[in-house]
Image 1 (tube, rainbow, N blue to C red):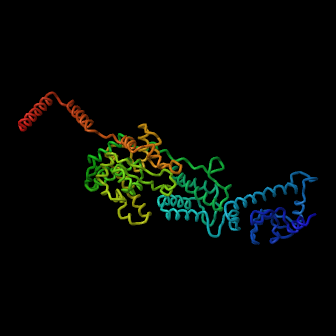
Image 2 (tube, rainbow, N blue to C red):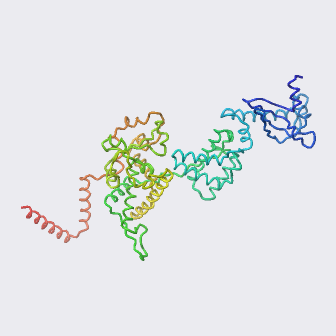
Length: 515
C-alpha cells in the first residue's frame, strides 16, 4: 500500500481532486460523530486553509469507508442490498457532479467559498435573487432607462407579492417557484401578455445571477418542454390598428374641427359619453387627436420619442423637409450602429400638424415642448411620469373621438405603430423600408447609413404619403360635385325648377355687377 492511500484511509477520504485553488474531497466529517463510530459523509471544499462542509445525508464508520475504498466488485454478492462497489460507484458519480459545479464556477469568475456556499444553499451573506432584481432596477434608472425600469419594477412587485419567495431564501429560485408565481398570476386574472412581460423580466435576472455565479446554468428554468418554464406568447395585436381610410377620416375631422363633441349640460339626463365640459376641453380633444395622428405619421413612434423630438441638424440640412431621432428605447445601442435611427419625412399632413402645435424652430429645441411641460427640467423618472399621463389623456380623448364617430374601436397611442406598419404593408411597400422606418435593428455595425443609399428621401416621401389619402383640388372639386348631385337627386321637379331660376338670377346679377 502506498503512503498516499494510507493517508487517505486515515483521513477518511474516499475521493479528492483540485480545481484551481479549491481542494474538493468526499470524506467523513469526524467533527460530528453520530452517537458512535459513524460520521456524516460530506463534500469538503477548501480554499486557503478555510473549509466548508456539505452533508450528503449518509453516515459511515471508518471501517465501512475503508471497505468501499478497497472494493473492486470482484467476489461481492449482488442482491437487493447495495454492495460496497456499487455504493462506491454511486458516490463517485455524486462527487463528479460537485466537481463539475466548481469547474463551472471557476470559469465564470474568482473561485471563493462564499460563491460555492451560495450555489450549495441558495443563500448569500450580502445578496439574494430579490436584491439582484432591485439592483437591476436601480442600474436601469441610473442609465436613463426609466421606462424599462418601470416595467421591471412592476414585474418585481408582482413576483414578491404572489410567489411567496423572499430575500431570506437567497438564490434558491427554481422552476417550482416560478410555476407557483405563474399559477398565482392566472388566478389574479393577469393577462397573458402581461405574464409574458413579467416572466421575461424574471428571466433577465436569472441570467444575471448565472453570470455572477449565484445560480448554476444547469438550474436555468426557462425554455421549452415539460421540465422548463415556457414564456407564453402575448395576445396578437393584429386587430389593434386603423386602416388608411379611418386615419384619413380622423385627419380631416382634425383639420376641419367638425367632430360632434357637444357641451355637457348640467341636469340633462341623456348627455352623450363623448360630450365635453367646456370649449377648452373640446380643443384638448383636437390636440390629443393631432398628437395621435403625429405618432402615426412619424413612422409609428411612441409618445416618449415624440416628446423628445428636436429640431436637430438633420432638420436644417434637409431644408426643413425631415425630422430625425434615435429611438429612446434603444438609445444606448445607437453607438453600435444597430439601426435605431428614425427619419420622418415632413409630408403635407405632418406639416399641417406642425404648423398647428409645434414650437418655432430653433436649433436643438423640442418640437412639442408642451408634452413635457415643467417636467423638462426634472429627472427622467418625472419626465416619464408626465409622458405617461399625456398618454392616458390621449387614450381617454381618443375614446371620445371614436364614440362620436360611432366606432366600436377605442384606439390608443400604441395603435399608431401597428397601423403604420400594417397600412404600408397592405400598400405593397417593401418590408425593408417599413422595418428601417420604424427604427428596427438591422444588426450589423455601420448599417445606419444604408437607409440613405437604399431609400432616398424622395422615396421616403412617396411611401409615407400612402398613410393618408390627401385630397387634391381636382379631387375636392369632384367630391363636391358628387355631393351636389346626390342632393339634387332628392329634389322634386318643382324644387329643381326653383333652384335653376334662383341660380339664373344670381348669375345675371353677377354679370350685371361686372359690366
